[in-house]
Image (tube, rainbow, N blue to C red; front, side, top):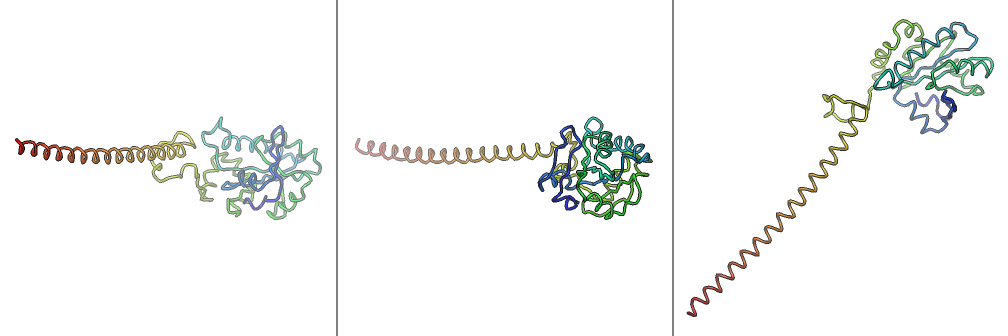
Length: 233
């Protein structure tokens, strides 16, 4: 899926419209995620009616105000508008975490052909391996809302790696996505403390044994000296 947008510029739909144009940035935001490609135009009345539904869907899955662990999901608006002004008009209605291709990028039309998009609005859902999970999920989103993501996740065999760092955390009640990392960190630090304690104990044990040998030798010499003194008497 990441390969679809390598060597491309993706723009975040925030106030600054930050550009993501490096392989590291593109990989970081798209890798191991279910990808939704939203094909639409500002002039389409159906698209305008669908945008609030899509925003609510996306918000329920990505916004920390609604969900404790934002889902592994990315949404890219593929504009089929006739002008940049039309594209900007629809972007103002879309969620701020949505990504989009610049209007001047002809790749928008290539994606339309690639996924055989004949009508708008269309939401193509793609698995992390680039295979198509749904050629048009608009009816599913309208009917089931954010609940349909569970089916997508199961179909894509998507693993939330944040919660699978170590088998020993499988039955733990994790309170946050960073819990496993913190636990591994503390476990490592605890192991280090144990090793340091063991080394100190071994060192102390060795010193005690040396001291005991010295004491035994001293006592033995003392006894020999006492015997010599007794013989002289």
